[in-house]
Image (cartoon, rainbow, N blue to C red):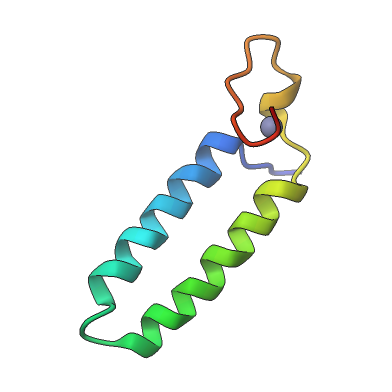
Length: 64
Ligand SMILES: [Zn+2]
């Protein structure tokens, strides 16, 4: 099964937040859609079976 690492989810989140802020002025309805995705990603981040947490040299900041 494919899994995202905590850092990868963080990168996706940053990309979504960046695009959301970029499109916000031109198209608020699109920004709203990205806001939903961002909220979902935050929930995913909390619930995910995080491979980084099993790493002894883990730098996971979400489940620490
Ligand atoms: Zn973790």
